[in-house]
Image (cartoon, each protein chain N blue to C red):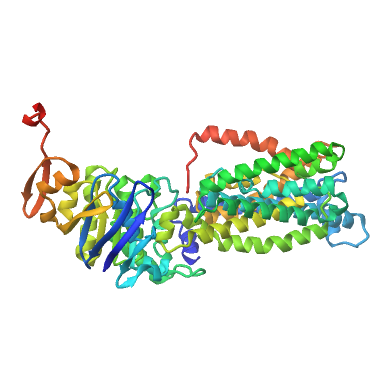
Length: 263
Length: 344
């Protein structure tokens, strides 16, 4: 569905992404995790073609992404960047209407079909009764749902999310994660997201990609990635892995001073 | 458009009522303000005399007063006010800053420099002033845009380059005025912003040039709106950010350019009018832009009428009056609002 082939990108002397290769299957939920500055957000932005790679290509549904127009890309793939403006002075409905932009020519206005898509997007995100509320009057979770509704109005097959739950209360985090899972299960939407909370990533994703220093270190089913070795390699911490059903989660082990300190 | 109309009809939007009332209020204001402007002057006209002048014999006194003196000035004031307010609205959208003003991109200083050069150094070409001022403004704006370009345009760079270029132009202007200090008199009214001596020819020309500008601005509204979401989101929605930013700057420059070339430097309309409109109807440019146009037109005609009649026998340049009123008023808004809601 979406893949990166030998993608290379450099945005300063200190940081580059080199020869990254990933392959996202249709209907998957994939999480990108890694320490700060590991290049996960950059990779997501390369996949969405906000950034242009200096080497290699991104394939969207079999076509090289640079051969597609921005609108054609936006009809297949929606992405929500992390820094969404919280002060936007517009209503939920106005925001969601923007999602129809890729489907509209220069002078075309919204028609009946667009209206139906907008209704549907509001319904999927349970925002019908918030249609005419201002974004700045909503809670963080509701606002994030409104942005997701805008992305849905694009009618994409792939949804890219950059830290969709950062800065939200735990209850709102769950609300957003449940919505994402629902979109995946009911609509078969392919989801690729950068998540900060590794336990959350483990709960909600089929596959995890772990990055460090601009390289992919692990790329496998969640159960295979969440292991003591990975936390040692990537984050340099000791953890305990437990299972809740078939979903793994980790608990950091407190650093106590053992023998190695004394020598 | 249809959804917009049905939204207004069904009054679903929380601001729907205010928007309709503001529109009605501004339309009525324009009618009254224009009438006020036409009847006011050294010869005060009665309403029936205005009517006589409008419809009467070509050689009657009222005809001359209305058609040759008052009406041209009213029309020029109206159009210049509209141009400045629309231009301000667009520039604030592009720069994602409610305090932006077409001056940032150097239109005003570029036009002023050319005006100073023409009136002081080459007074024999004074008839070309509007054209040359327009070209000066436009070229400066494009220069700033080009210098700020670095594989893409960023707002911060445009503003910084603008500050630098505006400083250079300001210094050049001061130098010329010092070197030719005996001739400075001629350019001072223009620098302060005046609409006096407007002719019907000028008014017609202004209408002729501004109409395509207004049509373009209305078509550009969706570009401004989508830029509010931020460059990255706009791109992700399939929008060509660079292209529409350039287009919007050209339209805004064009509108300011034609206004400045006729009336000199009139500040604050482009800043204050859209700001007040936004406080009333919210930041949706589908409403802010047309309502600012009406508000700007009405406001400038009103201010100009006051500037030329209240301080008899002096005729105050309207730009001066506006700066006197606009400055404190703006401080008041800032003080009262505490934090101005950023909308970009």
